[in-house]
Length: 291
Image (cartoon, rainbow, N blue to C red; front, side, top):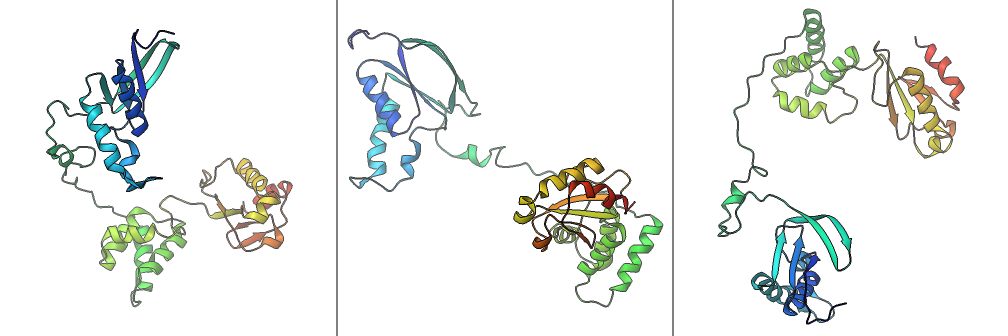
């Protein structure tokens, strides 16, 4: 190993926290060229977030700031901020390092610290664009008649939005977009508010659902007794995944945390029908009874 006076090559320090800065300064003062790599845009690390340091109770910034200034001004320390080490090749004492330096979109040599780049940042701030005109959704005549009938049923009710949406969901097993648009228009409620309320409840769907809703319980009791296998058997039988619907719109599949029948686990429900003490062999016959 060469003596300290026979300084050759350069030194790479990864991490610009208090430890990385002190190591860089010690090596730089010994005469070595130091490359200080830091993945964040500035050196300093997390110490700047501390109020006091243990065990001396010194001010964190009072300890950190002198080292940051010295690293910034030291002729032997080259800071590679906003950079990450990608690869290291070779052996100790003779190696090559590939460092990827991320684009800042700002020339650090011309930076005056004015902060205008943050105000104009295209990552944080999105340019305002006039929304494109949305073509009105016109429901089919039979769908319009059905939605109007449901609206008339609840016309005298205060807060009719939820009952109307429940009626449409029960009729079609989902909320057709044109029907939701008609509800917004008829009740005089902004469409954004209707959608905000409808998306809050998982009983509503904006995708077509099957006539029969299958829910397999994966609560603790059911899972321990094979609920996962029951779910797998249903998925194989119907060739759908959880959250999916068969192509003929006959079945939809969901998993739930509990159906309140732990004594009969493993359990699944099809609409309002409950099936307990299930085994995989029972699944084909149960599903066949709904076709």
